[in-house]
Structure formats: structure tokens, C-alpha cells
Image 1 (spheres, rainbow, N blue to C red):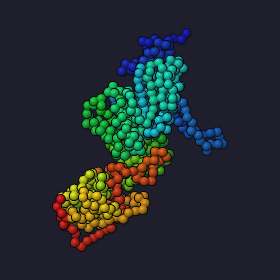
Image 2 (cartoon, rainbow, N blue to C red):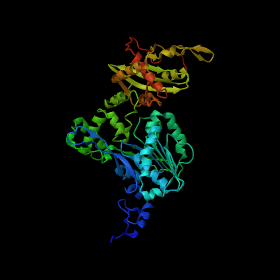
Image 3 (tube, one colour):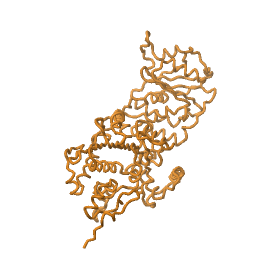
Image 4 (cartoon, rainbow, N blue to C red):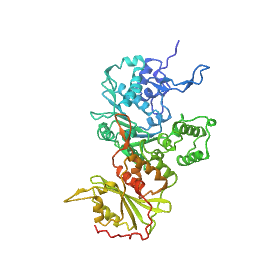
Length: 542
């Protein structure tokens, strides 16, 4: 005789729900379990997922060959996923290390909501159609098709496509897309939003203006991504949410809750110590991180980190900061893939060449310009001290006449050296009733010692020349802050059709600052005039 547990004997969690490890043995217990959303998602009894198994050796005598196997298992949340479940808010932004399974968790969560709630709309936004369909096929549809037969039979489909499931028993649905503008979306997940912002900025704006407002106050929005540079909607949302958390602000339903999941907090990221050699430099890095997070990082975790860095990213520290950040600040030290000056800026920071750089009185200040008519005008201010090229200031403005910039320079009180303008400064332009070139107008305003930087036939040569001179450059971290942000986010154009980066740079708000800095690399020659210019040269008052 089999002893059946009755409903009253079902073990309970502290919150009153059913313990996740409980398995029902009769219909009454099953019905009680199915009323508990957390049990349904976390028990490992309902939803199956595909995971990638470890490399395995084949038969003896053929042990050099390895194969990767896709394995099917019941879903149970890991440590990081449990933390997210325990701290979900109405709006959530997740900055994370790779491969922690948040997309899988959210797909299961949304599917469960659609199956067990009436008239609910659940959506998942991915960076492109291929990624959206893969998520839907492997995580949503697979989990539904592999439900226990008695449950699946009671939850038939009214619509079944490559991007949507509509359930006949309750009129709820779950779908994937690259953006969602129409109707109400009660549950919305935006996957790898940082990559969307980096590669498809117009699409990112559409998501922010169209998809996110479609989530009602009572709904749940989850944005998750690895870091992709210090710009874009994902960076802005993350920084606002982090600031709210740091100041312990009481969140409204429209505020984002910040979630950060570091690599060192994941139990999966460990390996035997004897397989990896840690250098003094490596251990110094971990000790610095330990002081910031106020907890130890085990030797096994250190070994995993170094092995992953060297094997997967060719020893690149910067790539590890992005893909497996130790702190939120570290995540954004690495700019997005496709940026031109990522390595150079990372090296400058490491070597403390982005610091406090004082102005040396009496030493001529040179300027490097990018000028625009409808676009902005950007200027870098530079002093040569010994063998060091010191950038002491950056200034930019949009829609302002040249007199605005001359007036700004007049107020600085510097001793002036030479002023480097791009090749198109000689091109005549319509200015009111006259046709003049920028160099003509600036000279009329009193700007002296102007140099015209010759045009390069191929812009990549100019970009490479800029990379080559970075080792000689120091930047004032305060007065050059905006300029450095532009350099860090100056990137290649993304080819949507081919799915790769173009050779040409993208023209956006970062272009003027980057082009102005490129004038330094292409045109600067070290001048040592016998008599420096007066701090207030013979320019017309404006």
C-alpha cells in the first residue's frame, strides 16, 4: 500500500509558498503546487531546457576527438537567477557577466505567466531577427512542447508561429520581435540591450519611445545586457538606476531597480588551481577587487578567470572587464566592439595618463579643430612639455558662429601657439550675404598662426596614425572628460545587411571630437617659437 501525503502535509516556504523540492504524488497536491508560481518555475518539475554539456572524450583510441552535446534537463534556477527572482521590481535593469542564464530564466517566467494567467501579453525583444527566433525556438517553444503531457493537453494553441504562441484556453500570448510598439505588453524582456544600442541606435530609440511605454504600471519590464561602452540608452538607464541604488532612493513604479551580477558571485566559475599559473600582477588585480567588494576571491575562481581570459580573449583584460566584470564601474571600462580607440584609452588609464594635467604658464597652447556648419565644432587644447603631449582642455558647441569660439578662447588667458584646422577649412561657404571660408572668417576675428592639416586619402590611415600617437598623450580627466567620452565611443558603422562592422566610421555626436583629435595625429609638428604669442593676441573683440 502506497501512503499518500495529504495537502496539509505539503512543506511550506517562509513566504507561505510550497518548497521547491516538493513533488506531488496525487491530484490534490498537484493542483496546490500549480497555484504557486514560484514552485512552477523553480521546482524543476515542469519546464525543460536545452543546455550545452561539457566536452567529452569519445571511445578509447579516439580520445583526441571531442564533441559537444546538447542536453535536455528540467529547469532549476542557479544562484544568480534566484537572487533576481527575490528582488524583481516593476522595472529592472541587469548589468551582468556572460552565461548566467537570465534570458532562459525570463523566457520560462514569461511562458509560465502566459500559461497560467488570462489575457496577458508577454514579449521578448532581441537585437536582430535571427537572435529573436533562436530565443523563441530554443527557450520558449521548446519548454512548452516538452511540458508534461497532461498539462500541455489542457493548454492548447490558438496560434503557433516562429515568433508567437497564443493560447486557446486563456487568450494569453508570448512573442519575440526586434521591437514592439502596438498594444499593451504586460511582461517585457529586452535582451542584450547594450548591443542593440551599440549596433542599432535608431532601433534602441524606438524601443525606448515605443516598446517600454507599452508596459503598464502593473507590468514587469526587465532589461539585461553585458556592457557596451559609456553611451547609449542602456548606459544611461543603468547609471540612473545605479545612482538610485547608491543613494537608497525609494523607487516608484516607473523607476528602475539596478541589479548587478559579477562573475565572482557565480558558483559555476571555478576550476582547479594547479591547471593555471597566476602571476604577481594577476594576484594584485584580485587583491584590489577584494578590497572593493569586501570579500575574498578563492584561488579556484581566480584560476577560472585567468584561464578564460587567456583562452577565450587572447589575454585581453579589457574584454574581460566587459564580458565578465568584477564591479559595475569595471564593466564600462571597455567600450563596445567596433570602437577605434578602446585599447589605447584603456592603456592610458592603466598608465595613469588620464589624470590631473595642470596648465604650464608661459608654454604655448595649441588647438586642434573640427569645424562644422550645421554640425558641431570641437576643439582640443594642447601643450607640449618635453616629450609629453598634454591635452589640458576640450570644448565643443553646436550651432554657434566662429565668433563664439574665439570669444571663449579670449577668456582663457593662454599663451597661444598654433591652431590646426582640417583641410575643408579652406572651402568657401555661404555666411549671410558673403561667401567666405572658415579660415578667412577666423583670421578676420584675429586668430593667428593657423595651420591647415592636409586631407588623407583613406581615413583609416588617419585613424591608425591617431592610435600610434596615443602613447605620447596625457589628458586632464576633468577638463577633457567630454572629449574622452567621445573618443571612447567613436566607432565603425554597422552593416545591418551583412551583419558586420564597416570600415568607415559612423557619423554621430562623437565624430567631431574624434576628427578634431585626428588633426593632432595627422598635422602636428613640434614648433618652438623664439617669441611666444601673447595671451591676448591681436584678434578682434567679439
